[in-house]
Amino acid sequence: MIVVFSVWHNMFHLPLGVGEKVLRPLLIYVFLVAMLRIVGKRELGQANTLDLVVLLLVANAVQNGIIGDDLSVTGAALGAVTLFAVNETFNRATYSLPWFSRLVEGEPTVLIRDGKPVRTTLRHAAISLDELRSIARRQGFDRLEEVDKAILETNGVVTMFRKDEPHRYHEAEPGGPRVGKHRRAHR
Image (cartoon, rainbow, N blue to C red; front, side, top):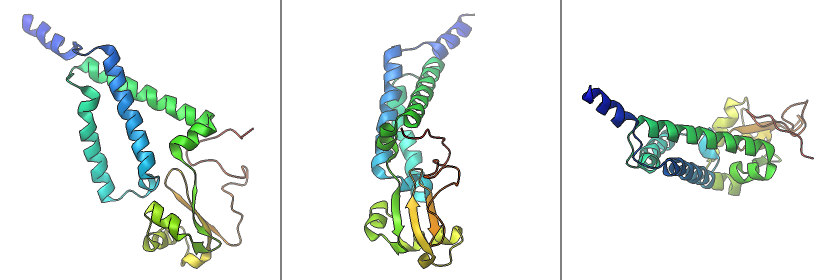
């Protein structure tokens, strides 16, 4: 009976205070959002093997920062609830507050303007001409010269337009919705 109680106690006893268990994942979350924003939006849509390795190692590196000395089920659940709550709060804030969305997600970036690659933007986004050609081929363009405008969206997707088509995302919403999000019109 004592052994069973000891096992249950070890699994659910919270050696750290609740405040610390909430603060740790909150700080790590904000840190990671800031780092991903600094690294750039290219990482989101065009992740390669090196990017995947970095993400796995970062996950391992920040684990102790989130859990501290706490290995309890209660601590893990509290940390997870905090991460879900912070994530939902950030999602709702980016939906509701355009300034917060720009701060966290950035702005779309023009990669090709008037049929010509914008080399400084490509260099800043770390997208080579070969990679841009590959993206163009996946979207049905044989050559970059056929692309009038290419935009690196805030979610990492590259949107390309032909010379003869309007630079809109969707007929129903000039200016277009973000991929995966519905956004209220600016007032």
